[in-house]
Image 1 (tube, rainbow, N blue to C red):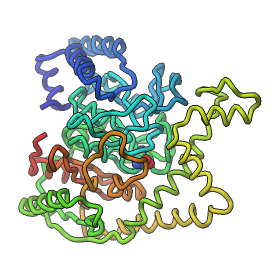
Image 2: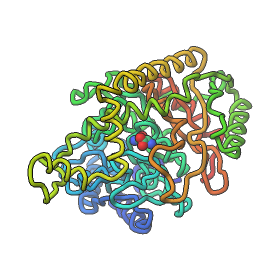
Image 3: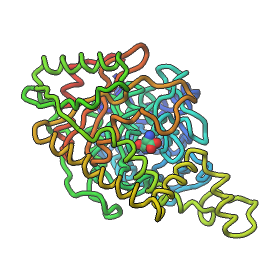
Length: 470
Ligand code: GLN
């Protein structure tokens, strides 16, 4: 199996050097070029770092257990002296002067970034098809999209180019593409991982997450990047070992199944697979309990109001004056703003800025923005109630199989089952549990706030019971 654990032991047993691991990652990337998973490839830097890692190994001076292992990061995460485009023409030539905290922590641990992955423009989308650099393809069926917005990172792991990739998840952008490519996608609690250096979409919802092949690898990655960061005031000081509960059985674990997540939007074949998985978990000791999240159907409209409002504000900095694309046609300052933004933002991004500006305007603020904030509180309270009797909640990650490339529009049903956890700031994970035809079915588990160790323990137990075959 290709994963962090196996590469670690290859290195530890001298079965491979870091230079060899990096070379084979780069070769794999080249063989899979058609998938369009990467926006930039850091060949020279990666090779140089691999040599340094091998030297550290010889001197028994490794930085961590993942020293020398290849990884990839989504192209909305800043990396000093490298292009960070957020898949937009607006930032096509932006070279970041600093590195995101989460990325820096992985670098400090000795992980080697081989490239920056393709995504939906400014992380807005569900297909990775709105990238200025062209759509990403799903390795399981190249006529289909891999999900989004972190599709490139999902594909980099699913195609076994790297064992770990970072993405960002605002309402499902890690969990949904993980489900659609048959791998693990994990979003921690809001505040667990610093957002410093992550290009903001909706700041109260964005959280950096991980793509891996196993739950254990996701726990390893979180242990490295979690923690308080003076550069991000929303981070919390509650560092812990997220692997400590791995290996526990499901005996006595209480899994809640929210009944609202089995409505008519759920593909009947997906439903059958999720129900079969629930039976299997029950046979293996889990206590299954039906619960209700009564405000479920308001979650997506609530997200659309809050996220577009925040996005319109966050994206106002791209004005052509400082580090972005600049229109050469402008005759005065206002003209510079409008021509720059008109020429460099894609259609979907413009729609959201307009919608977000509208809901923040004097006429609509009370009726939309304030109502959405109230709804967000009710959605969180639904979870609080469910967690009075449950350890985790279970549902399908996506209601159906991915669409053909070019068919998905930006706001669709595709993340209706992942959005509520984001609004409530809760940790959630998608693990593959079955297949319908060529398409993997994701099992989505939501944990209580800051209960990642418990969530990962239950997810890992489910993973070993399910024994998913890619
Ligand atoms: N589909 C969501 C959106 O387009 C995904 C956002 C995300 O999680 N980055 O807003």
